[in-house]
Length: 259
Ligand code: PXP
Image (tube, rainbow, N blue to C red):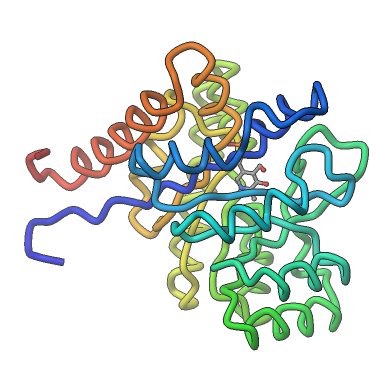
């Protein structure tokens, strides 16, 4: 990086909800692979897909096709189960983000309890790393969870931005600021422990800026809002605007003139 250049977080585009719409009718349209190609053309730095145990959106075939036809790094979100481990080892995505999963939830509700996890998670992470798959753990921005991520051998933490985004959506500035402070402290601690820091969940045009400004954050993973916006203005335009807002926030915070 040259002097005066601003390090902008990468944008991983989560395409799960293209599959949600496809599955509503059981056919092949809209195709998540086509969305991934469009995301790539619009400047996404990576593609994220969550293969859930109940296959409610992304399917096994989607993962196979994404690996075969997309050159961007694939971040496979999954629960730490033996079924998912086999799938990850078969497809060898660039990275796996381990998330908690409950069948009845609408979306991932909280972070992984790494602090309370046992030897099983340690060996799960070891198997992925042996296959040269980068391991990320999706956690709440809590000190004990971040410290546990450092101790367990993960390379990346993804901080759960959901509660912060909900307060922004509700217009509760004080509660949003408190959550943002937790994210900042967690990001600083994670970086001190040598972990790469990512963040995601619930981010929108309105909430992304203050998170993008946190200097340790290297990647943001965003899905639902982008796919929703794509209905109104197209995926290309939604991704470009999100990238612009991320860059603008970092540039403004650094005091460097935007290109
Ligand atoms: N990061 C993780 C770990 C997630 O589970 C999700 C949702 O699948 C996201 C990011 C993206 O969240 P959203 O779809 O709300 O942008």
